[in-house]
Structure formats: structure tokens, C-alpha cells
Figure (tube, rainbow, N blue to C red):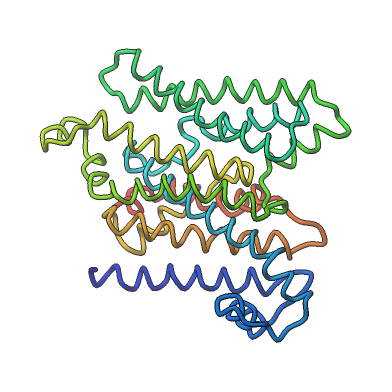
Length: 337
């Protein structure tokens, strides 16, 4: 680990630890650090905690699943954004560049429209994200082009617009008193209904996709080069591109299915991680995962505690992300170097 990367990882870990502690401690039912340590230690050792049953329930059953889900979703979106920015060689790319979020949104609103329940909505959202990206890549494969990366981006824009129209149509047909508010709330992003079952369905695809991207982190450095240079170095660009897109899409679709659409995380966090540890993907991928988990934990804690009602995560990330994006446009060359 280089002299520059060690302080960067230290800062990222500090953000994650701070996010975890604040997420457990703050809320309608405040909990002290000593109570958290007592409950977690008792859980690990098999002993009995020296706190009330209400405190134990809040830590393990109420905040615990939500805290873990926020860390997983933040890490997943940050890793996916890092992979896509490197693959497309564009610092302004986010995980929904190929239509994964739009596909998941359409699947979710269709599930809500047909009253399929939480599990059905999440499954349709997950499948919708995968199908959308598969359609984009199919277009990129069938249509000849000199620049396959540019073609994928354009296909993603087209498919995303089509799916967005589908979301608008379903919302127009939905019951305005029950279904439409549920659709709107889901599209704005929230982790309020997360439980232990949701964690399992979220953890498996996120772990598989993130592990694949971590394994490919060395080759992602080469994929950030122009196509001809990468091929000249002996890298099979087409299969590697498929692997990176598949892994990043898997974690993005799982995250969107569990939390709704939470924008800006996959755009902002990779740049923050790059500023901390540098552009080498061997360090950038794990740093982005750690920083992304801590970042979304802090955002979710603000969403729960800043007002008398919970603020949707998508609104908060947009408020933070928009000025960052403006700054990024003005200084994109320095942030990408």
C-alpha cells in the first residue's frame, strides 16, 4: 500500500465506523454506545445483555437490518459506479448509465400495480434491471459501430427513455389513492421497510457482483485505456467488458430492488475515493466500497432524524449530489487525474 493510499483508507474506514455508530445511536429512541457494545458482545458470545428488552429489539430487529442494508447498498452503488466510470472512461458516468435503474423502476411499479407484495415488487425490480441492461448490450452487439463504448452509452440512453415512458404510463393507470403514492415513495428511495429477509436477497447478488469486480480490479486498469491500446496489451476486451457490465449490473439491480432509486451515490463516491487513494483500481474498488457504505449510512441517518417524517433518500442524495456535480463539471480534469 502506497504512502498516499494508507491515509485514504484510514479516512474511508473512519467514515464507515462513524456511519455505523451514528446509525445505531440516533433515532426516535436514542441508544448509547455502551448499550450497543453490550448487546453486540452478548450476541457474539451467547450471553445475556445487561440492557432492557426494548433496547435489544431496537438494535437487533429495528435498526440492525436497516443499517446493514444501507451499508450494502452504498457499497454496491459505489463499486458499480467505479466500474462503469473506468469502463466507459468517463468521470460523469453513474450506475444507471445502461438503464438498470430504469428497468428496475418499471419492474417495481408493475409489481405495485398488480399488488404483488413486497417480495414480488423486489423480484420484478431486480429482473427489470437485468433485462434492461441485457437489451442494451444486445443492441450494442447487433449494431456495428467503430466505438462500441459510445454505442452502449447511446443504447442505454434510448432504452432508459423507453423504460421511463413505461413507468409514466403505469403511474398514469394506477389508483391515485393507494398505488400511485406507493410507486412515488418507492421511486424516491427508502430503506424504511428493510427486514432480515430482505438482507439475504440483497447480500447474495451484491457479494457475488462485488467479488467479481474486486477480482477483475487489475484488468479494469487496462480497460480504462483506449480500446486499441487494451487489445495491444493482450487483453480480451469484449469478454472482459461483458464480465464487468454483468457484475456491476447485478449489484446495481439488487440495490435498486431493495432500496428504490437512490441517485448520485455511484457518481459522487468514486470521485471521493479516487481523491483518497488514487486512480489504481486495485485500491479504488475496495476504497469506494468502504466509503460508499459509510456515506449512505450517514445519509440514511439524516433521513431518519432530520425531520418529524422520514425524508426519501433520493431527495437527500440529490441535494448533496447536484452542487457536487456542478463542481465536477467545472473541474473534471483535476478530479479524474
